[in-house]
Length: 147
Image (tube, rainbow, N blue to C red; front, side, top):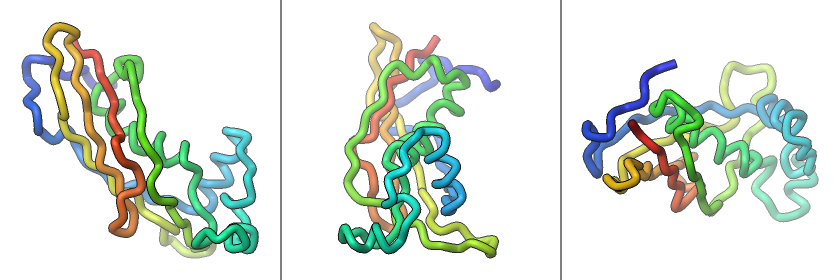
């Protein structure tokens, strides 16, 4: 596990990292099994279309979890994240790419230091989360307690 960054080394506006997370239909099936969320919008294209979605979509909590992983990896300790919240703004359609090496969607995640609280020794990390050029989460913010 990496070391938690020192509070004194941080500056508001600094980027903490970025990553791309490929998403496949297989990932959604695995997540459904782990979470117990078997809503057919996450695995049945016909059902998703019938409820006016653009096709099968990723679970919101899957997307939220994939995004905060950038923060927990940077912090070096998942327990350092003392608050995390977001608003879901757009679904993440996941194309059926079964039998190929291509993902059905890609999440692009960028984290920046949004605010510092010297008294509490916390940093608010703002996450920009997009897929196919569309912002899929807004106000995605994690508060991290630092040494």
